[in-house]
Length: 165
Image (cartoon, rainbow, N blue to C red):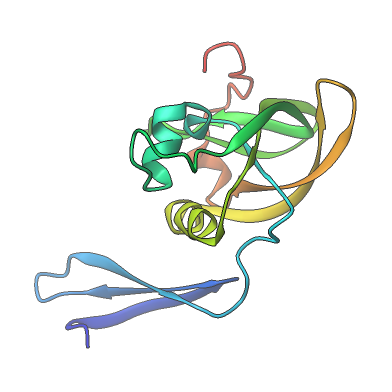
């Protein structure tokens, strides 16, 4: 049992996040997995930020440097969204934007543990959403991506960061 006073409990599909405060009133999270599936096994993840860097993806998936479970990927574009800088952070976020586009990669996960690792890492700041992306050969693919679930004023107003990321 966690010590501290319950401040807030919020449910996102597949993850119950409970925020407690300890005796010094410092907040900490208590994520609890639920039984819902995190990802459909045949649907890739659309990555648009740091997960596009192979070493960061490998770390996020808890893979050894020489692991053979490294996911394969394809370059892709997501329409009707734009990529923003998160103010005070080193990572980006995407949000719906008519006429916008975000370049990224479709990542084909190898197993459920990889899906769980991504889910654990992204679910506090982002909402997982199923989207339609287009690969460089013009084919459309269903994919999951993580969309910003914070306030709009936490995103830099200079939305188009495609050329600086």
